Length: 115
Length: 114
Image 1 (cartoon, each protein chain N blue to C red):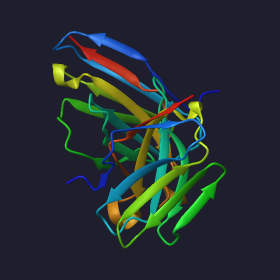
Image 2 (image 1 turned 180 degrees about the horizontal axis):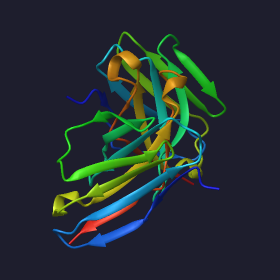
Image 3 (image 1 turned 60 degrees about the horizontal axis):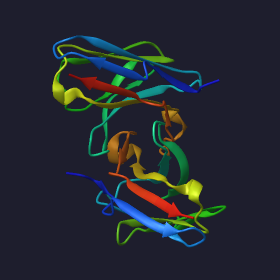
């Protein structure tokens, strides 16, 4: 039973399209994250939600809009896709209130290719 | 400003030898340092952590050393095994440092040769 699952695993689409990536965690965590890993393999945080409230919003184009319907889900919608959006997107979750250690549990990633 | 850096993008060692992966940070407010391991086509998984009040933490073949004065930590893997071949990310977190989020380094690709 996968702890953090994200769908789809692969996403190939044309420039200008709108797409969504879904993430669900069954660990009972209170915080969820979206990371972008670009071609240089750097893991860059994009957003974080704690109990459905946005707590981290890094400098990300407003074409990216996260939505958290409940604590167990954090979806990422991307409008007007651009070539530079091609990357692997990772969802993660953690129990933030457990302390500063903040061990995060990651999904397997969604590889987005914009053509 | 990249607060966590792993200056070696890759490391290759022979099976049975020691692997040493390094990480430097700039923010003295970090409370915890964590190492994650990532295999291809999978997400990172937590490996080992160390509190900023300690200088060493050991878990089986994995030991993390922290030098606060130098703002430097290292992960030692002894003995290295081919299954350890992966990308290793150093991360730092702290409620005062970055509001609870983790800041990741660029990663070091470890290859353990049989």
